[in-house]
Image (tube, rainbow, N blue to C red):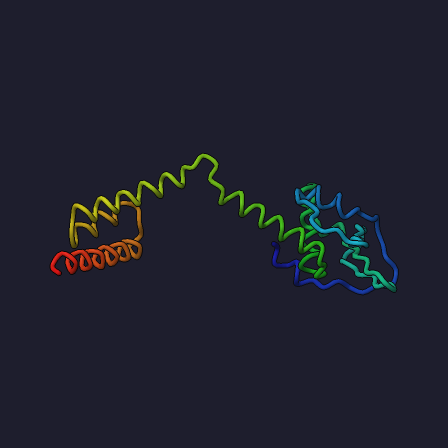
Length: 174
């Protein structure tokens, strides 16, 4: 999100200006899914003035955005309009659409379709188990650290192994 989207407030006017844009079409052009269903979608208009305007009429708000402030390319332009509505005008439907889009992108980034992340984690886990079975003390710590775990995880693994050894020794001696 552009930090300047919150900085410039909408100037109030009593007469809306510009060409109306369909909210669902705006979402699709921005590459987002319109995830909200509202009785009255946001009324958005693009005008050729110098600043963004808000026409507050009885029962509705009309957001009139200045075309000169927008990017020229369509996906960026549509995204700008959504972000300006969401963060500059605090418009609920736009915020929901952008939040759903962020969640969708985060889920795609976290997905592991071929299982490579899972296999890599399993290899590290097996390396740690092997190191703990074969070495003790600093040698095990060095082996665990070289397996791809960070130092904190390696210390945790060593502490768990020490607890396990103490429990095993206690039951053996008893």
